[in-house]
Length: 209
Image (cartoon, rainbow, N blue to C red):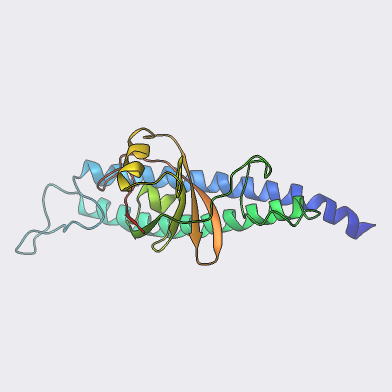
């Protein structure tokens, strides 16, 4: 009886754990935004030199503050990647546990009814670059990920990367769901196109396959 009660409570406990992880993720992202603002106020990003050509500290920059912010951002980015992986694993565990009686649905993360959803599995584009600290990085996108769906764009209606650019331009500040193929796995991530310290709204490079 005890084992049965624990197995029945497992989906709820996994959900609570995932919610805690998401709360921590939000706090990490907020701290990164605050630290990024410090860099912006000093007129630098993550890689610009803090000394002049002769090796003297630039007097227009609070070097201690910038170095501390950069170091902290790198640490937080590592924490963010780790927690995104935990969230991904937690969601997969939650849905697999909740639907243990139905093993037909093999998609890791899905919120659509399987009978109504059109399942796309053919990638049409590939990620060749992801900049640290970018919206794409925060979303958990990796170099080498193949894009199966980018919002409403999929292999059946994709013509060129301009289609993706159009979705991005009309979705600034709003979440776009991406379905990715990573090796043999399929996963869904939420990407929010927005301005950041680097170029563009995504911080990644996408090429057609």
